[in-house]
Amino acid sequence: MQDVVLAMLAKEPAYGYELRSRMRGALGPLGEAMNAGQIYVTLTRLAKAGLVTSERAEGLPDRPDRRVYALTSAGQQRVAAWLAEVSWPKPDLSEFHLKLVAAAAARLADPVALVDAQRREVLRRLRDAQRAALERSTDPVVGLLLEGVVLRLRADLEWLEACERMWTDRDPTGRMAKA
Amino acid sequence: MSGSALLRARGVTRWYGRGSALVRAVDEVDLDVPAGQTLAIMGPSGCGKSTLLHLLGGLQRPTDGEIWLADHRIDVMSERALARLRRDHVGFVFQSFHLMDELTAVENVELAALLAGQPPRRARRRALDLLDRVELADRATHLPSAMSGGQRQRVAIARALSNEPRVVLADEPTGNLDSAATLEVLRLFEELRLAGQTLVVVTHDARIAAVADRVISMRDGSFADDSRFAGIADGAGTVYGGWR
Image 1 (cartoon, rainbow over the protein chains, first blue to last red):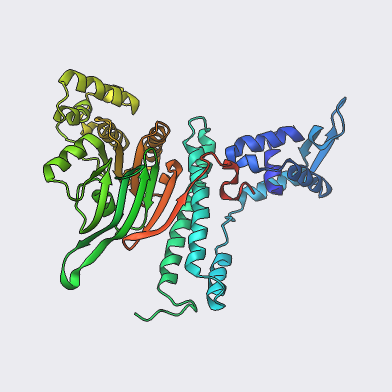
Image 2 (image 1 turned 135 degrees about the vertical axis):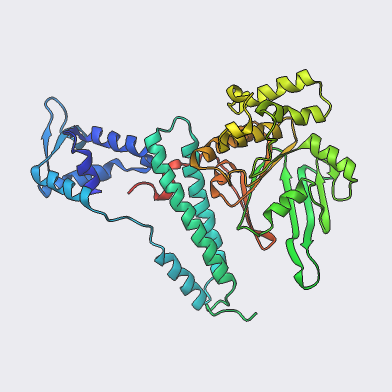
């Protein structure tokens, strides 16, 4: 979050509200879930860390959305380092995997039923993302983001299919069922 | 006797092979598809979804069970009556388009109407309207070989709509298409859904869910899960956990 906010300031200084609408615009429908408060909290932290400065605009009330924020040189360096970074955020599958293992071992729930419920949820998200991508009014750049989201969710669905096959063929303790 | 369902299956089973090589492709499936529903049947290859679609459309007959289509019981129908019923009430869309290579787009689309006995002029007018609807009016005189995969599939969808079918059955309609062409076909299906066209799609492509009121997961010949989506426009902001 901090890096993203810094990078959005790299082009030029901006009011808090401008920054927020820039990010919303770039995210399209994904930006609707964005909480304005988060951005201002992040800006305050970045200011404390010396990565941004802010000025009160003349004649306007002193509120975070009405202040003008700019990168410091330390902030610029941090943006450059972030751009060069190759970390790749990934959904953590190990938690769900452990949920299945634990549910099966303690006979708390049928792993296949857990997989089914999870698949419905992933399918619902995939459906929402694909529907947003279908809108002709969707900006092509935002469409690219949605395509990425859809591709990941399709991969998740494939993995859930594999989970289902595995747990269907096993007894609830995780051992292979006798043929 | 099909009640309110346009398509109805009871205990439908289809076996292939014999003896020890017997395979139960579809295993005692019950299904009701009300008019106007967009249903996606998903599952891995070999789960029986294509066989089920062929049974529902009267392209194959079940080993056991009963199937009604638009108030007609089709599993016991004569071959000739079944052919007429398919022609009048069912539109098929296939993965590999199944267009006639030597006919132009408009000739492909009007063929079904001509075979149904419509006057040529009316069939042509309807075919041109349909090509316009799938945004291919400017390709009417092109041969399939001069069109992209996505365009060919849109011609095939126009053809499927030619006789104003009660139901459109599609078998992996996006299977041979790239991402952009898939989007075109999905948009078209969405228009059909909004127009109240009953549509059953079997696919392993989860993107079809974007235009479905209901998604059934199929495994080993039977239904493993049946999800219905209440609101179609439920908060796009929640996709993939929103933003981070």
